[in-house]
Image (spheres, protein in one colour):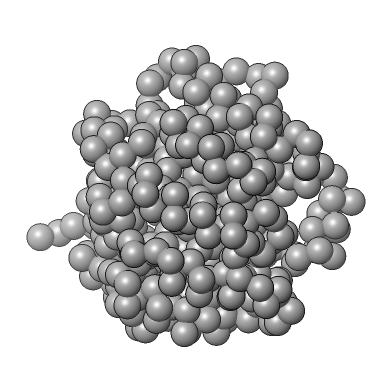
Length: 346
Ligand SMILES: [Zn+2]
């Protein structure tokens, strides 16, 4: 067998990579005056990286809150569906369950799974969860960094997050997600909220996009103890590309893979996945004042030179191979672990 490394990547990518966190709907919303944004701006990168499933996250920026949160969230979903209609190549499908994701892949389409990062659009109304479920939302993280009616986000600092767990609304929401078959995503939740969600839920927990505190020690990231808790419940942790290290020089492809290895060493390769959180294309659209605001409020993101967008996913696989990951390990990491979660919950 004389398979080149590129042929080997082709083979490993044939089923499509699953990326559980991408801020797609908010960008479509900001570009709502235009048509075919998905096809012209995103499809080429998805295709180059062999992306098969994308967790498309509804997120509401501060400037829309509180009054316009619900409307902007609905508009973000509207833009996704509108883009499906205008898209000529029919390369995308909004999927609501495992069977639809499989069907999308069998017909050569990229599956979009609508997710929500922060439940501000729901206010304190459990009925709104039902509405968003009917619109296709299938994974929900209760908070981003800020506190809301459901709970509190983890601080972008080694300590200082709220010691409080979820609110009563947050607890009801988690129970209702479990009942409906919506994935509860632990990314961003503060440590107290993390414990409480695990005490309420019975299904395998996920953290769609995070990094390990061993290499970037902030409450927003995940501790070894938390990693163990996810492993015991056969959950999956998606590794984020933008918080690999507080130091720019350590924010590299190898640094990214170190996070993967750390989780795999603690709880096994069956519990690691991808949550790239590619964010540079949005960051670059911001004026410098807004970039500075992000740095002051949270942190300065360090983008990985050769893993900045979906078109570069092959660079990751190439480096995994060079570092000795087997085909089986690589396929689990890139795709199969998330697919197992979809099969179990959706
Ligand atoms: Zn996030």
